[in-house]
Image (cartoon, rainbow, N blue to C red; front, side, top):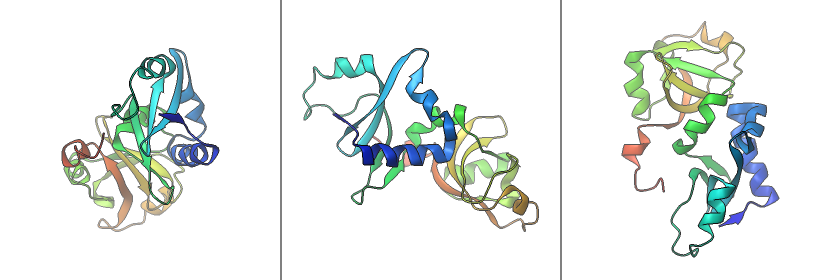
Length: 180
């Protein structure tokens, strides 16, 4: 487990800032202690410094995971967020989309959000902006990218895609072996 390089940190922060903007500072400087990001086997983990010190007692080849996996770097050094980061992105999300109860299951199976399933959307959401997807009961379901801006959504036909699917909590069941 090692600290991220400058390029890796930049890629991570660019991706996370698409969803939470300037609130990324709140992830590192928390009132309950200092938290950091560490890289282990192409995966980025978010953990407290206290846990980091404890994890140094375990050898690298025996260590499977520590903290919360935020995502991983691909072979081309692009960063992909995992659904395991949702609990940390949702409270700080700048742009949100709420889906109707009938569209929740479709989204949780990995499909995009259609206009017919859109309940609400945050005002002034621009096209290709990162959004967190919620149920109408304010339960975070996943995250994606806005296919259309808020103003464009008002004029769309019901079968048009509003949010491109990125990750959802259904992945805990569908991809349970690749999340660690």
